[in-house]
Length: 603
Image (cartoon, rainbow, N blue to C red):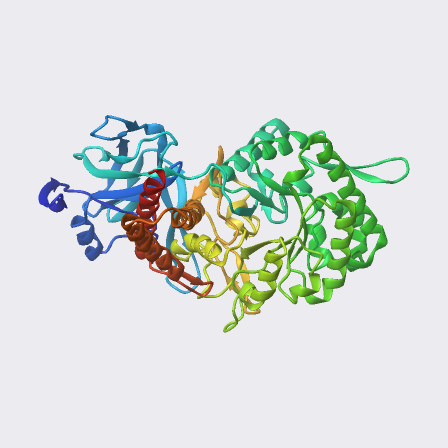
């Protein structure tokens, strides 16, 4: 078979008797009811383009996908070769170490028949096979180093199956003449659990304490590399491998930080914020102790009385006092916050208020975070970081932030922070479930910019315990990664238990460390989108203060049109641009406009 692809206005014939190539943008994630290609799909790949254009600022990323389709026969030992991206005018280049290849594995989700296969798992590249009439996506991610000169850079990805002629994808990268900051201005709070009912971290990583310690650091670094700068819940208050509780002769409790200090230093050196409040509280005593193994043995006997127990309140106070004292001595207290409650029901507000007051007394300089979605004004004066739900699971209702928007705006004016979080909301709110489009992973950061909020939170990245039993079979040969991942999770949506595949599972437990996902990679892209939007807004304001000239007036008009388009794309939490292609096109306009503004401000 011979296919025709168009490049630079001319047709070029490429021999591909067994396979076809196609290149697509980074937001392509289509579920398939069958892994096998239909004849029509095979024809579409035969006619597909094999060139791709991407763009990024310095210290930023962009990505695309290469699709290897095998309609004519099995492909064996498929190898990919990447070249450096070279600026033909200057000879400068972006080295191979900044170009990463990932073989995308699909995850089968059940529910309505037929089952659907969703591409998500990002295995670091190694040679692969493609069975006849199957398709294999490969994600190509490019990082632009901070010192890169602006301009166009070209290279290619060569694909060569064993016994077949090579084909290439031509790559053009435009580097814009500005840089993204090292430190993300937005609080990006994500859960990472190691030792509780949310995760079976040490089941996947048994071995010596030294090996387990190194593995925890790998995960934290992995999150940091994805611009995550805040750990919710976290191993900093829960993990018996890291923390323990000791009691002095008078019966006073405190933490033992002999093992924890190296972890805390690791977080502080990366500028990451972390929770130091134990528990935080949950809706029931049973759940509270399941999620907090450090407290379970001593206090599980309290059951539901834990919410009115002077004994437990005293223990929580003493533990917090010891944490604050230790961090103050180390100079690390500025990185700490106290997460008081997780989605408290209305009948627990009295207890939450009591805990907020206690934290204020013990640690007045440590901010108190509450995720309170019922009558938040009852907590006025008791919360320093507000964190309502972006959406809602109740049909026809606005999201929790919108419901009490005026109140939260008043708290912002008072100098307090307002974050929000992604949970199990219904459409049209965005979500990060496995079977949602990838545009859902980016748009929350546009919405956060649009609303002028300070942070965005997601409950977990390693909620593997909730996944299907297939992942935890005793025989290693019968479980992940030797068998497919089961993404089972049941959400409570609209008061009903609903299958929500991949909820809380943005990272997969690889044999040697964390394995990323299409969703987490797109979330990092969204965090960088936030910085683009912030830059555009600020550079418009800076140029508007300069002496007016015809050229500057024209540039400001054009920039404000792009800014208005960005605001329309992220109009409200339930009204946003759901076409990924249009969102990427708008991102390109934003980048070009920032570049033009940057140039004008230098004059």
